[in-house]
Amino acid sequence: MRVLLLGSGGREHALAWKLAQSPRLEKLFVCPGNPGTAALDPARVENKPIAPLDAPALLDLCAAEQITLCVVGPEQPLVEGVADTLRAAGIAVVGPGRAGAQLEGSKVFSKRFMLEGGIPTAPARIFDRAGLAEARAFVGAHPLPVVIKADGLAAGKGVVVAQTTDEALTALEDMLAHDRFGAAGQQVLVETFMPGKELSYFVLTDGQTAIALPEAQDHKRAYDNDQGPNTGGMGAASPVAWASPDLKATIEDEIVAPTLAALRNQGIDYRGFLFIGLMVGPEGSPRVVEYNCRLGDPETQAILPRMEGDLLALCAAAATDTLADLPLPGLPAPMHSLAVVLAAEGYPAKPKTGGVLTGLAEAAQTGALVFEAGTGAGPTAAERTAHGGRVLAVSAQGGTLAEAQRLAYGAMEQLRLPGSFYRKDIGHQAG
Ligand code: GLY
Image (cartoon, rainbow, N blue to C red; front, side):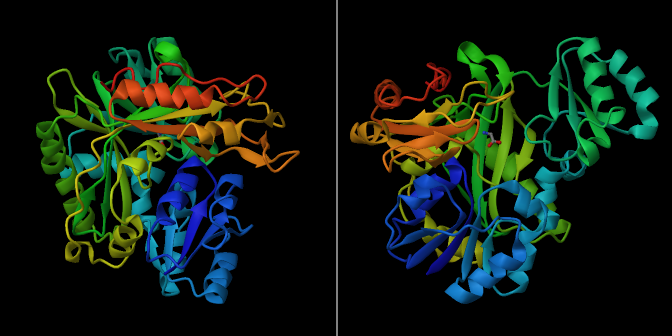
């Protein structure tokens, strides 16, 4: 099979690594990929310098290279309809079209979708610019903490969990009055805060059948003990010990099945990954915080090493509506997996780029996996330059959580990038 993978982050490096293990793979093209995907088996994996939003260039590549399947990593191309364009040209795609990607692309759409579909979530009110005065009054009277969410994609910065009314009003005005998020902030949700523990739950679906992937727990704050600013994710652990079989059965019955039914009722043909961000309340009931129309980053770097079997076969079946024809995939490997992110100095506010990263070969020698993200070519083939906020993730597996942590942090100690940092407590809530 000749396959296209869109994206350039750590998630895509992990996807390329896993897809390249498939005996069905003839050639994987990664657009644009990163130095990590460039370092995979060159006979089977090749980076092409094409942006994931450049649909005409992607179509040309698919025609020239006889590509029949595309796996989309990040959300932006999905929200902008790249999957629709490729499908219209006869290419099978893992990733929803524009209609299904609204689950992530519009928080207003997804909240209405959940409320209409009877899917457990927090109550919320929706306001637009004309309703700013009403929104202010609503926020002023709302119990704290209160959650303010911009409607559209805002690079992970469009959600504020306000601890004070002043903080909530500032967030509201930033979005509705000061245009801080442009079109993404033209509508805002004011949502009741849900206490509990966060869980990242993933399925791969062809719209009819859904296969659960290993669950994970993300660590969104920049610093240890869940302190500091929110980030895209500083590390992930899988499995999550408190995610019991009963809890997973409840998630399947009360959230996954109604979500797929609601998509079908709306005539949305959803094929691809669905990442359900859940809050599991003190009484044990799961509620949806948000949907994402893709896999998580860095969760993917933790969960794929636990998946046994052929991911490419699963992807091809999801894209062609034939998941039910496959034998049920086995349970995830009974190992603990940990992905720890190395971040550039200044991340997330103002990451410093250009520093030289060394020690990749030494880190790999420990047996851990290194999934690159914000890296560029370095002064030598063994080095890289830091190119973005999250530079890479070290992913390690062990028989226990403590063993996975020991391996991951041992590998991390081999890496050198001036000013960089990583959390030392990834997995602290997973055991
Ligand atoms: N780690 C959270 C996300 O991928 O959105």
